Image (cartoon, rainbow, N blue to C red):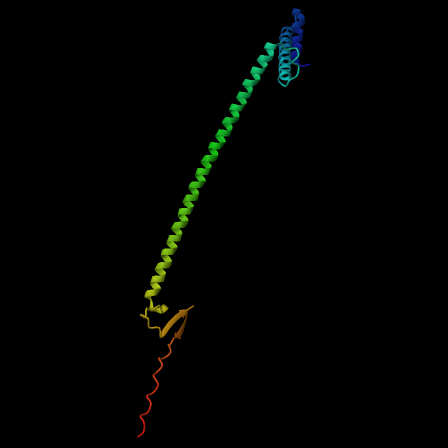
Amino acid sequence: MTRTKKIYDQYQKALGTDLWSAQYEKMQEQLRKLKDINHMLKKEIRQRIGEDLNELSIDHLRDLEQNMSEALNGVRGRKYHVIKTQIDIYKKKVRSLEERQGNLWMEYVRSLEERHRNLWMEYEARLEDPQYGLVDSEGDYESAAALVNGVSNLYICIPPAPRAAPPPAPPPAS
């Protein structure tokens, strides 16, 4: 035994009273009340799942039905709220993705336009640079020079010469 407990025991013997009995009785009463509440809650749970309904009066059955209906409405309300919140979140996500897709599409179009502009400027520069042999000869295609892969090639196209008229027949001999 500890020293403090011995002191309490000696004090109780000297006075002839029990210091803990009042506290013990309060705890016993509280335990009994908690057991009663527990018993009532278990009975209510059994009634809500459809057991032990025989001993209930019509009024109690109506009350039970009303309580269950209110509980069901509460559950539905919470569930609808959760679903509505999720729908709103997904709508925001869809709008965000659509906006991002639009931005990406515009960026893609701009890059294509820029590439097209660059290619067009490169083409025009080659037209003006004689190194590439792009010469406007106004329909005279007798010769053309080309630079392919850095190698100069000369292509000559000579159209066939027009056929000459047959020589005139010699004059008759006389």
